[in-house]
Image (cartoon, rainbow, N blue to C red; front, side, top):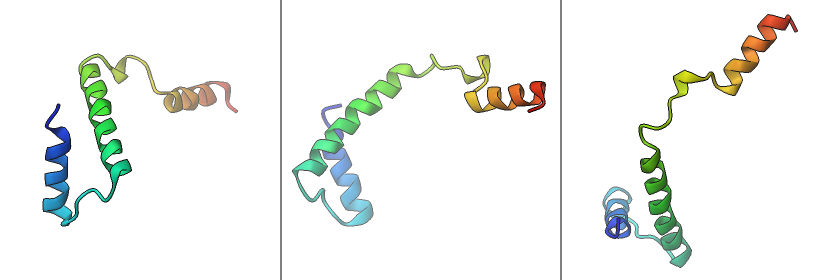
Length: 67
């Protein structure tokens, strides 16, 4: 993903007509590349249907106890 910062700057310039304004913006963009890689590594491993979300579980618990 070495090309990510260059591609992102090009996309931002093309869509919004601006370049990252400063070094913190470029640093955050570089960190975003790592975040994207981490999510890509999880692809196919998360199955939300196996266990209800905490909100769904709370709804079911409330329904069952009548609270």
